[in-house]
Length: 205
Image 1: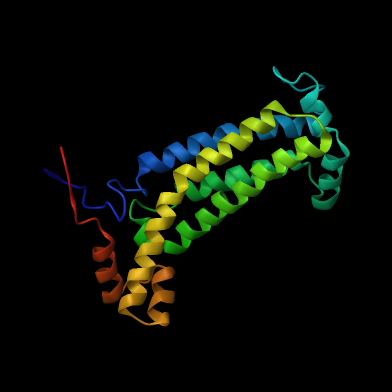
Image 2: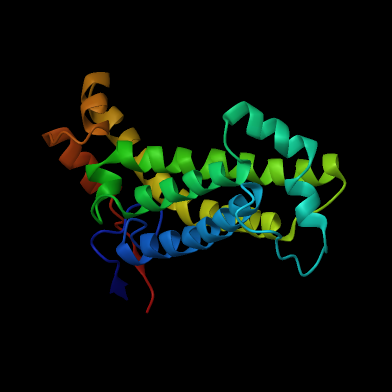
């Protein structure tokens, strides 16, 4: 029997805030940044066409559709460029903080979760609805939707650990203590809650 790493918060047998975990998220998000920027260049007419090995002119038809133009009118930016900002923010949040940020910076982890999970789900839904509404499919848009799904899978564990940590604080202290811990202020209660959140069980070799 071998002990789990000392920084493995419940319910995982690894540290979801580790650099290996977060660098993987940043690298995958960078793929989406490049794709979204490429699509945005076409929408800005900086390049004459877009590559689509599956649906032919489907990507061009989606990017030039009335739906896409409506979104551009609402946000004053091509929707692909909005995606660039979203994925860049994923990278920034993934790289911020230490390997104990699930405990030291819960606000950062929760904000990261909001950026990746709900917005990622919305992105996936919009890509699917766009294909249904426009009657064309965009290969690279589907790739970015897949990236969003992968990011959700990779990010949710850290959010869960931070939530468990905050629940442990609430069990031991007041709402004020919880609020201060959320913003990373240290206290005896926060220290006890952090220890309680760390994984205590053993795992087999």
